[in-house]
View 1 (cartoon, helix red, strand yellow):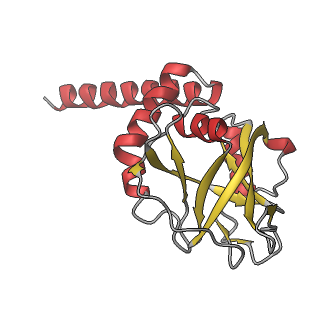
View 2 (tube, rainbow, N blue to C red):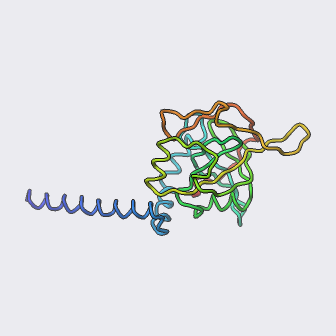
Length: 205
């Protein structure tokens, strides 16, 4: 009996190792079915939990509020924004496959909640992470290299100017933002705030 138990345990460990290896390979090489499977897991398990604290001061994730490009329905998705001189850069581990990315690109605007502040952002652009105007923390760069993440979405903060027109409002890497514990968290204090976030359906990836 002990011998059989050992064989079963060894078989289970071997299967888990194979599954883990296939998952890592698929995430690194951006295999569509594996990316879509992970996105479904995120929608049902990971995102709802992240949404409990996303966007609050000190939270790992922020929240992007966007509308369905066909339905017009409001959605909210947890993301990890990093401040730039005039906006934010959001790493895209699933490329442009997620619906939230397509919705923001189609609308040309969104609402981003980060570190307790709400920003109206516009002019979204997908760029290579090496070309992004952002000093990513070392831990984030290691993660990007490990999982082959090569794209990010750059958005710019907009706010009403004194004459009522819309102008870019600097967020700034040096204007009160700092990396915490060398991790991927970036704190943002002050800066322009926008209207309250819309009522949203949660956790669309």
